Structures are given as structure tokens and as C-alpha cells.
Length: 50
Image (cartoon, rainbow, N blue to C red; front, side, top):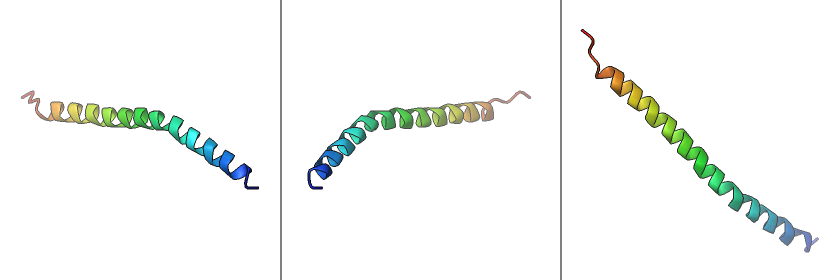
């Protein structure tokens, strides 16, 4: 059983290291969408048609 645990830990570390760039891309997409929504909202608030 002791031989199996280090293998599982190594696999878990490799999986988390590979998931980290995906997490960064996901957070960039979320923040980018919030920034786009905020730009649209503030842009429409500052537009006075009358």
C-alpha cells in the first residue's frame, strides 16, 4: 500500500499543475466579461439622447 500512495500523490500534483493554466484562462475570461459589461453599462449611463 505504501508504494501506491506516492504514485497517487505524484499524479495529483501533475493534474493540479496542468489545471493551473486552465484556471488562469478561466479567471481571465470571467474578469474580461465583467469588464465588458461594466464598460457597456457605464457607456450607456453617460449617453444622454435628449
